[in-house]
Image (cartoon, rainbow, N blue to C red; front, top):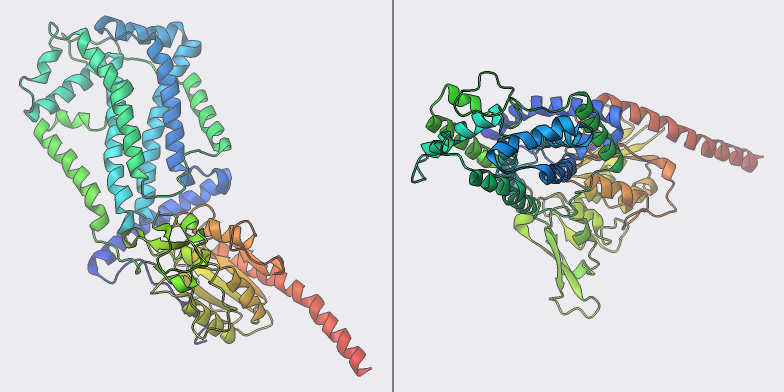
Length: 543
């Protein structure tokens, strides 16, 4: 069929050598993540899947670290001799509370860094770090370093043999930079170490670095809207109980007390925070610096290796904008603002304004606009209040008409799919037509009713996996509009049995086909009573 499958969104990769190489790198990592995500959905459900809440989960873990750390600080002695003994008192004498708090502090810190690393891997594997998302990516790299420094300084405060090893190794790294008037390693000669050093370290760990972390997190999410910082209650409870059980079964303990006259022989490193220190046993400090700085710079320039092409930013047609503000409320990337009217319209007081360098080209705002209504027959060319120049809503209507005209068979089904979900362009089914959009969030609900009135027996909407939209909220807003929970909503007169929403990733093709088959069976049952009624009516007419 010539128009059975309508392509309104191209591949997210450009046709360049660099993008082809990047696609080869992304694909195996992406598939590994998607398979892991599938099992997590089966185990936890989409609402509690921790992979969908890595950011808010990390913040929850930081709260656990903060509360447990404040309790530990009440008993902590910031002197050289008192630091180790105060921690030992909490660990062994007050094991029922202080020891649990110490273990919670340790394991929540490890879980936080693991969550952050998973978050980075997830965004990379799903290609959610290039184009206008570069800002969140490069601001996230320094944030990661602040978290690592928090963990390292926390290990110093225990002042056991592991802390001694970390302190001397860190001093060697600092001395390699030659930015201090005297060598830092001199501070760790037995006669030079003072209580004042521990006071300064406690200040950095308890106040200086946490304040920097809060500021860094604020910058990190500055270009995003509706940032979810509260983890779902069930996931929070489950995570806390897991940490509590781990703390009781395998409590955190210290190495023997630090002794600057002896070199530690056996150390149990925390590889979440201390993975770089063993390099100093084989490399010079300056070489280690080059490696760390090089990796950091590489991470920061990754969004431009190569840069990603995005569609032209959304444009506002003031003649069709009533200033309702729904596009402003729905935009996930803070690319739309509401300002005073500039065209002198006496009817409306506000207008939507798009910030081009923040617009990612998702088209979610198009689905938000009440003027994105295909039933407006008075216009030869469908014009809406906000539109995508490369994928205008008029072309969506044209593609819908062509797809409907090409579908044959007893049950006619139209599929609106997402360019980041399962690929439906190779469906070899004459009864199914498909339209591939940039994001299902750009689908105005009126198009569903339009397709049903134009001859489709059912409309199947397939975006990204539920709870995991490439553009953050596209599939969520779309589902809420179809369920009448968000404006513009699907009219109540539309038969909901003839509309089906199913999120599917690239690796979910078999599940997608099963959903298509099940939906077709449901539509056949809906058509059957109508067919029987028509047959009886014909018998009456001929009788």
